[in-house]
Amino acid sequence: MSAPTIHEAAAAVADPSAYADEDRLHAALARLRASSPVARVETPGYNPFWAITRHEDIMAVERANDVFTNSPRPVLMTAQQEELQAAVQIRTLIHMDDPEHKKMRAVALNWFRPKTLKTMHSRIDDLARIYVDKLASAGGECDFVQEVAVNFPLYVIMSLLGVPEADFPRMLQLTQELVGFEDSEYARSADPDDQLSALLEMFEYFTKLAAQRRERPTDDMASTIANAVVDGEPLSDIDVVSYYALIATAGHDTTTSSISGGMRALVEHPGQRRRLTDDLDLLPAAAEEMIRWVTPVKAFMRTATADTQVGGVPIAAGDSLLLSYVSGNRDEDAFDEPFRFDVGREMNRHVAFGFGVHFCLGAPLARMEICSFYNELLPRLESVSLAGEPELSATTFVGGLKHLPIRYAMR
Ligand code: HEM
Image 1: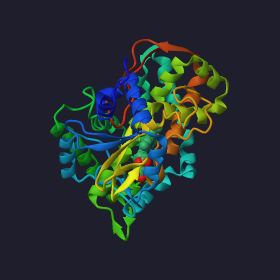
Image 2: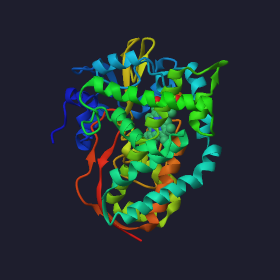
Image 3: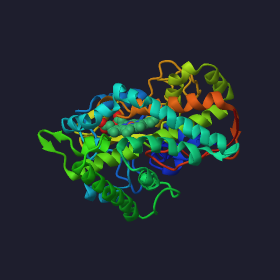
Image 4: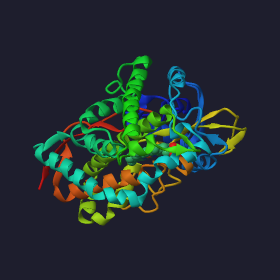
């Protein structure tokens, strides 16, 4: 494959299909990091933006959250989708800036503190065992994504939120339709109106849940959010359902992608799998490396509130910037041999969880889930190999493997 031109590389950043082809994507991002790390992207169907591809510049933008805000354009969408979404007035943490963001983040913060998570550890371990048992009983061949990796994080986050188990399949479908809106296998249809209808359906479901939890609070996260008071005022309905929608979507596909991409990496690097199986104390470092390797959240966006510069390139007030986490995590200046999968990697300062005031709220939970799962699986996994072609989702936002056919033997 010949190296892409700068123009082709910049266009790939906004092209969902590039993310389904890792070689093409990484060739494009490497080209940008080397020759145009702050690149203007003007591609049909999208409002223009700057693609920020170096680790150092991503961190600098995230750190300066007074100059670079999340509103009004936190996620890359087509111009048409941006217009439609503006009409819904969705207001989650990722759409907000301080001081409002800080107050709203505090509403659910306690649920994600290590002390609270500790109380859930044994429950998460139990769930990991259930899903590893399912793998054992699947008969030595399966699609690891669809049969295992999709369900375990779904179960954890929906239980924490307080969604009744009978509704998990519906939530799975809705979260996939929403997060995977750019992939034809997940999207409801190519019509943006249909994508919007998935969002409205989720809002309708969560509006009922919020009303129930206000009337009769329980000990779940949905009750904490529904009954929260900020600045002496109860949260509005739109704030509550937006919060639920963020937790449901952010807490699920991201962890699923890390677990399934981690599995693929272990299959393709058998020496690393043996090393980790022989020394499970490496699990925290290995989980971090899986998250860097996969980078399930490809990018978030910021908007400049004043004339400024990034990496020496002038940025005008009102310009949008796309922080390419997937590029930052393969930056040769930030990582020793970034294209090497190393379960014992030290100084792994990856940006897969972002950085600064919006740093992923669920990071400690995601880490715990990944460690619990592999702690249960690896001692029982005798052998594993690919049984077909892995398939990645086409997305510029959140995603990873859709299918990972494996053949395996378990103890
Ligand atoms: C924010 C990644 C798992 C909840 C974010 C951000 C990233 C991210 C990149 C934006 C950070 C920024 O703008 O600087 C990931 C990855 C995960 C993961 C890679 C799994 C490996 C989870 C889980 C939850 C969660 C399990 C649980 C609910 C959130 C929330 C935010 C967020 C609520 C918004 C925080 C804010 O704006 O203040 N995540 N996430 N995430 N994540 Fe995660």
